[in-house]
Length: 132
Image (cartoon, rainbow, N blue to C red; front, side):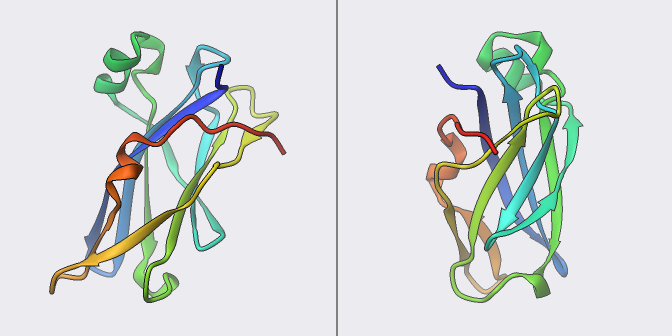
């Protein structure tokens, strides 16, 4: 069984920033995670964690996960051109452990707007396991 699960809902261009939104839970604790870091090209950015995510609570069948959403704005200037890599680190509910991603997801430019979007695999990211 997995310790944590996460999903990336959207990666959108907002002016000079890329906004990454998603959700993460600590299934081992049957509660929300202790926090989330969005990692772009190996550089971790702490995300704002705790936004309302009723759909996750419904999908996972546990109301404890209602505030499991996260978001992070990252300056476009801090993202390399080409296909930067995106991953997520989930902090355990007790804050004593973190779970590293089992893979990274390529971000790709979409059309003239240069909006970046995660590949479809990011929307149903598998459980993340590990410890540091």
